[in-house]
Amino acid sequence: MIRLLAAVLLLVIGAIGPVLAQDIAGSADHPLVGRFDGAVISAYDYREFDEYDFAQAPITVREPDNLEPIEGVVTRIAYILDGDQSLAEVARNYELALTGKGFELVFECETKECGGGNFAYGIETLPLPQMVVDPFNFRYIGVKRSGDAGETYAAVVISVDANRKVRIQVTVVETDTLAFKMVDAKAMQDAFAEKGSVALYGIYFDTDKADIKPESAPTLEEIAQFLTGAPGLSVVVVGHTDNQGTMDYNLDLSHRRAQAVVDALAANHGVAKDRMVAAGAGFLAPVAPNDSADGRAKNRRVELIPR
Image (cartoon, rainbow, N blue to C red; front, side, top):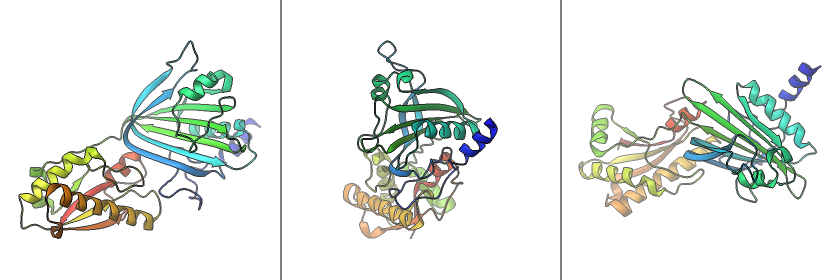
């Protein structure tokens, strides 16, 4: 009977369910977690490098520091579930789904066992109204999976809002997937001579945006030096994404990001704009499988090719 119940519960959470029409643009389930049936993604945040405080024990007045900082690729996804499911049902499904995928249970609790308000306010969640945690009614599941390449942590917070809708936040930290690359002007020249193109991973954007982040400045400077040293060269700046989201969405996003690079090089680094053309390939030219965070990180890049 117990095995039958577990099998039925596991059917509720799929590895990756179909993206619902109501999901926010550019969002997707994490492939290692999935979603509770009927839930809709209300907020999505992906960081190629960030820190997350992982709760591994109750947070109380006496024990305020039971949070372990974990660094790596961090994905935060908030869901809204408009149904009559209990928090216990949702939590049990997530626990079974995660342990069924090889995760080890590190810590799970409900309101009082977690530490009540100290826990609810101490853990990291997306800001209101993206995520709501009722300090008097919530569940928490923290799991970990180890492999040859590194470790993956997942934290699931489940609560309710004022309208009695179930709120869920899934946070996944992958410690093995950080692969920042800094390519200088000389390396760009060599890559052009050898391969006819160069892939750049030092230009950063926030999720779902085409605004270049300040930490991209060193790579932009190196691109400008490379182009200044080759005054007869014109290039196509090609944006690439992973396969999260629709084709049309990613084609548009990758083009806008490439155009942002062209605009930045022209406006801030003195590169003639008529030497550059922006193009977006979306996820149509992957250099790695998109079934892992490491592969998706490699596919998100800006590429220079001769024009």
